[in-house]
Length: 385
Image (tube, rainbow, N blue to C red):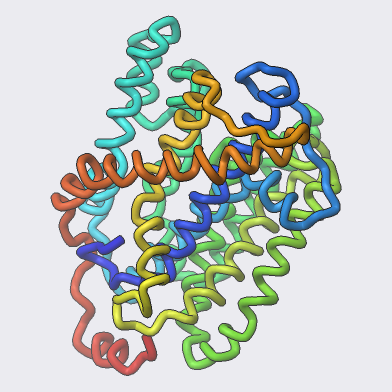
């Protein structure tokens, strides 16, 4: 999506489209699969383990949240390198970007699930603290509010992390990873649990945001080797699939064990490799290369709506029992329902909400990056885009 601050990179929207599609199929497999097994509209807790790497990619598709967060750290740093950030305008732009649709969903959630309402819970959720105890429940409408809250917290600290990263280099990013790793280790030693801390809080997700920032710094340093990065994309994508396959075989998301301490770091590093090698294909024109690229980029542009609304679309289809089930295999039926019903429905609704809610408010965004000084601008002009 185009920004008044950062040159448009269609490849970034391609990755957003992939992450949004992956999260839809992940929840579709979970919820539809549970419905076909038990008839209940809630996840039945039965985790799927498979030797098929493509199926485990979907089953562990919660990793799309990690991809979104790494990508945020990457694109902010990619655009801000060598420039000054206005903190106030940066946060204002973030509010124009995510608050209108998010607040609208919160309002719908209140009126749909009135039993979960309290004034304190409302204030907490609107303040992007939905990952903390006491926030609004809101059923399927606000089931993902925790992720919005965690990412917004990354936005709040980005300008400071960026300035310190420019001053001290990659060793500062490494120091942040060491600190968060230490907190997770202490938590596991104290409480013998670490999964939720790593998955649903800033203590785990900050790793991934910082890794995205470091990846952008490395990307600029490796710009003369873009061809090598392009050749490495297949390896990076295979590594991502292989990592999630191993993760699934090791117990999947539901497992809570010692090695989940380093789970966010490794996961963030794997997705950073995918981002760096894929963005290397960008031609620097600010335009998609062909119609297929344009179509995928359009899906990336509506990815925020897709993320916020897909859970509701899946729940609605189950509630209405508008489900295709041509076989007795719950997994196969769940994938078909997602591909033929939930994903297309979510895309259609997201196109509407993007154009009616998101896009108009994004027009209020202003520049938060100071112009590049003349010598730096001359140097940037010589860079291969």
